[in-house]
Image 1 (cartoon, rainbow, N blue to C red):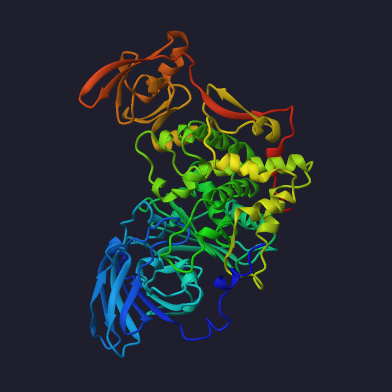
Image 2 (cartoon, rainbow, N blue to C red; image 1 turned 90 degrees about the vertical axis):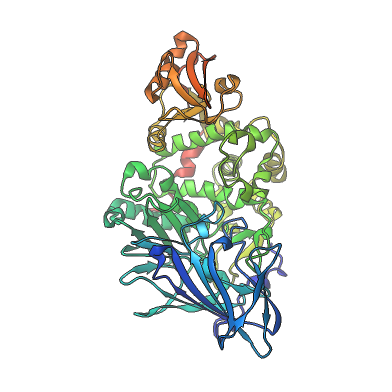
Length: 625
């Protein structure tokens, strides 16, 4: 059980939303197409030394990503217009020191914010805009007193958008007038966690089902045709809502909003929120089925699961009462790993992907994880603890460093746990039962956020299957490993790994989109259409031949390089017993003979008929049509 001593920190005071709001936030977004936002924040203050924060640790980012570097103008004054001098803290760049004059009980801050300049850790909570659409994350135009509790402090928000633009957000609208849109007062936690998307070409689609709370899909794009979703996909999105509510046994939200930007001009993104999700996909990713059945297919389900796993139940070390206290992220293999797993399950249960289409995706994940040599020195938990340092992809030798593996390896861990529960219970229990209990949703009695410790997870799992879960998780998350735990695939899940000579359709599509040749399991490298080497897999032929990322393959078997000739060279290796490459290394050419004779090799998962098809049972829809 969660400690009752913690709960009052996250309960809203009974009078919080009936009293006058503590802050007033006015945002002028009429110049968002010029990458500019203008804001006025009025807040309570005390005379003398007064400290103000610009949000630094925004929930969902797991990083100190508050982009204060994009503030272009910052001024403080009294409500009478008297200037107030300020100085930035020399250690905390998002902290500002003011001296408020005697008699003043309110401070007005005015700032300009430059959009479209996200850092790797602020991308999901930054603001964007062009001539046809915009994204406003309120944290980019917000300041608050240091002593503020984001659960007890309320604010009113008003925003002016470009003429004729429509918008979507989970904030409750109070009024829409020519001079601006006003939202009902709410806590700072909810406001900062409720982004707004807007634009000229906008579409709203209701996804509410028979047994679900209201849910909506909001779409914006530079092209009206990009948001012309077909009835089949809309039906699948409705089923996603129904399947998720069935999985968790209820909803944590009064109404939910999928905010989706379809654009090639914004960075691809996904970020969870309390009653919404912010999603950015390519302009044609939703209407082009081949493009959709890749990363985009899993995006909405993943962020939707976070409404329960991450936003409602959250590791205790990641729950704070402000936006500047650092989070402790070592349990991200639950927060994100479990979400990744459940999101993939719901992608198939909703019909967005078929079980057959999902199988090569799972195989690709396993293949990726098998090559993470960094596992020998860095346990999974450390990828979570150091999450924000690993967000940016390493340009070279990423397999030696590891990245945010708590997503994919965490998902594989929870797949193993689900299969184990089903095996131990003879198929009568599953991780679904854990979700219904651990994420039990009663909006009338529970606080906005309930923190948890790992011990609570273990206790609830123990009720489902008599397994030493402490040892199970400790072995897989806190210890270094020579190899990934994969024995459960054929024995418990009912599928075995098998190398094949032909890539899956999923891999072909991925190679086409990324414009590269993937030869990870043969030569141990990837190369672009121009021959530039991307990744090198430690221990495989390219590594043994001292190749490295950034070098360029200019020739294959005495012929000028092309992607097809590299593939032909790999196929010919069965008889030639090698692949000859001409490498451009800086300004130097050199001939390299790769010692390889295995031909094309692509990892796949195939059915092991000697065991029950547990994976098929996991992916089976639970909501009757």
